[in-house]
Length: 160
Ligand code: IDP
Ligand code: MG
Image (cartoon, rainbow, N blue to C red; front, side, top):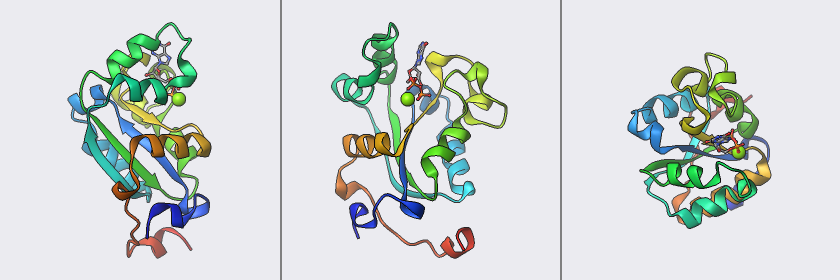
């Protein structure tokens, strides 16, 4: 089945997660994937991509008037990114908790940003901030044929 047939609510909620260029360079991909897998979420899309500033401008459109906007586009286009879609109950909100705060200095130890980075301009991971943003971001970064719906045999051990 294609992902849109599964809907976007309950255990089928999806979020867009990206390991930013600094996270890839610092070899944090495995660690980050591991945390989402072990939490119980399901990977439905994953690719290593180098994206254009045009895509990034659309992705970060809400921040276009910020002073750091052009630096953000340069940072995000400076190397490959690991783009992912993760699925599960409350995955949007939970992923944000797992990531920590936007500024790593405000992120608690135990969160991804709280464990692996120090500066807001190099904060290693992106995660959608709402279900609505997730839908927009997933359709911006992934084609339908790049997303997989699959039923892991472990789901009855994660959900009751
Ligand atoms: P988020 O990534 O936690 O959702 P946003 O406010 O959406 O945070 O900002 C998007 C990204 O822009 C941040 O993750 C960070 O990489 C960058 N950014 C945000 N604020 C600053 C800043 O004050 N200086 C430099 N970069 C920033
Ligand atoms: Mg954001």
